[in-house]
Length: 250
Image (cartoon, rainbow, N blue to C red; front, side):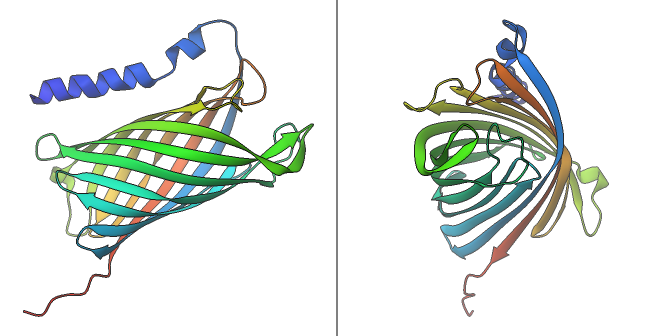
């Protein structure tokens, strides 16, 4: 496949995934919110084909996530990961920004990373979330949990800038889009859950990367029909890779 064709497929996927039909169809109730998304990612290599994945996220007044998983590294740039995530969410209808609602989320994913030329990477990720979210009635938390299923498809394009590389860092640009879809008997209004489109500038130094930029999260309400939120997020994400494999003596 030529370089131009690969670009074409990436742009086509972004166009198809972005929810134009949700914003231009019938009349919707849309609100806007602004926040900072802080994230930390840790990959710990423990064996030639295995690593431990950990990430932490926080958006004030929206959610906090602590996630971990075990990754199996397969040939041809394919990674398979399974793990568990713990979430703290706001309570719908309460009007409070407190993260009082609980969610337990076993998850698994397949990620494929390929190269397009010497300075461009194209990544595809499919993730499945098994979501146990604390039940809410009349803005009150209940001790019971509702089960829903969610599938997520993400396409990510990374462009390196070797011409601006210094002794201590390599700058790069990341364009990403992810669509999230809900399934299950407890899903009433939001089979389409949300879409995440982001553009970030990154700096890489050996095992450390810093990414910052803008993410637009278009989210549909799970409890009110035809209600959506445009979330405008400033992202500040830090990535750290740690290798604790035992070194063989020569």
